Image (cartoon, rainbow, N blue to C red; front, side):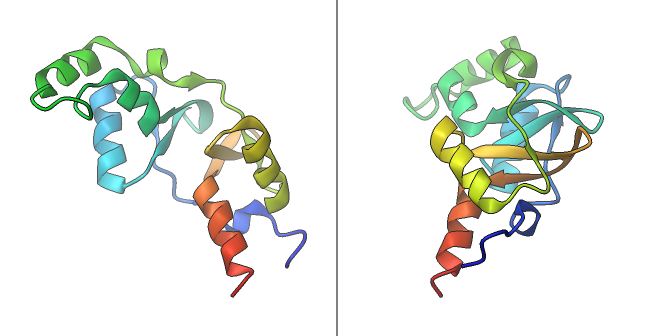
Length: 139
């Protein structure tokens, strides 16, 4: 197993982002369209928050009750990204090693971390990325 592999080798470099002034419907659309679970919220290239599919699911009824799409739309119209996102999320440096990222995921129970360099978003790494990397070590 490679001991000092940087996360830049496993992170997603082309990151889907939203601006905190976008609306929540855009977040839902981006999550579905890109089959992802986390979206960094940016101001320029600076990460100011992160919003997850779980954050959206906590707000909506669609997953629980049929015919509640109208209620979901109303909730998404009433709230802003800033009200729903995790503000000032933990980030990780692009030169961090994969083991360090795995340790953060275990300790903090996060499932995604924006990867930054000089306060600018460079990628995102998820628990799936780390698990995939560890599985490849057994091939």
